[in-house]
Length: 227
Ligand code: C5P
Image 1: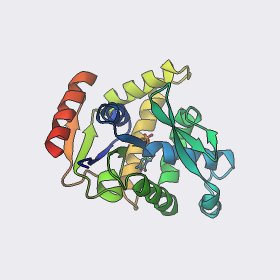
Image 2: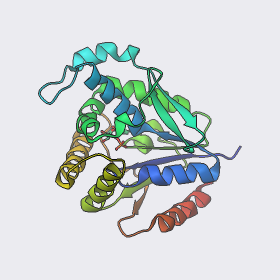
Image 3: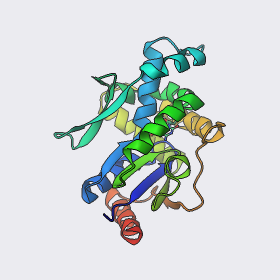
Image 4: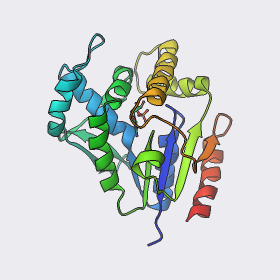
């Protein structure tokens, strides 16, 4: 078994999940989208009134954490796993701009992180996993054989996220998408617990000017060197 662990971290909308999915498919590895897990918890917090634009009942959410069950189920048709919150498929519902506006606040809560990190470590314990997020190379799998840190300019990233939201039929305004990307990056890099930071041994990949194919080839090269 020469399977490795591939940790992909970086700012919002740097194309982590796109390349992670490509790699998992190519290598026959499992792909774990940890952002989806934080989004599912944020979605739960919103649905149960723990977080609104005006307040955050952090303690209320922490008390309910044991009621929150997050799971992934592979969807053959789509070719990737969808996220389930307490047995309900929430894959689409967690990708809205509204969830994006609350997720970083929820993800800054240590108790939330602790629960999800434990589950992530469990999912990757047999290696052969591509996991993307903000703290995979630093906290979840500090011993990962390959760590990538993806970057791209804020405008490139906002453009991509904007197109994604428009393509799925969400009526969003570009400036709000840009503002959200910037706000999340700020919260994610400034939080006390597991802030987003490049691991010392991570390889930085700036894909601002790379096509998807170029990016995949650059990264596949790094994978082959790490295996
Ligand atoms: O990857 P995605 O943009 O979907 O992640 C949504 C949010 O979840 C991030 O902005 C961050 O606040 C949080 N997150 C995190 N740690 C991870 C993955 C995501 O804090 N490993």
